[in-house]
Length: 62
Image (cartoon, rainbow, N blue to C red; front, top):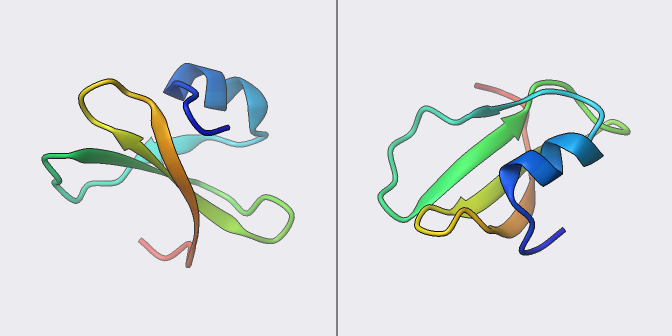
């Protein structure tokens, strides 16, 4: 998935993802709205080019 764009990720995963409200000038973080196979995920994109740079497990708490 690394290097993929947001729209490509949305086609692959089975639930909605939404932009994290925390401001960061270098990255955009999108979180899954529900667990995928029991795990919530955060997708971290580089802000300038919109490429996925990492995927992290998240707590699911917002």
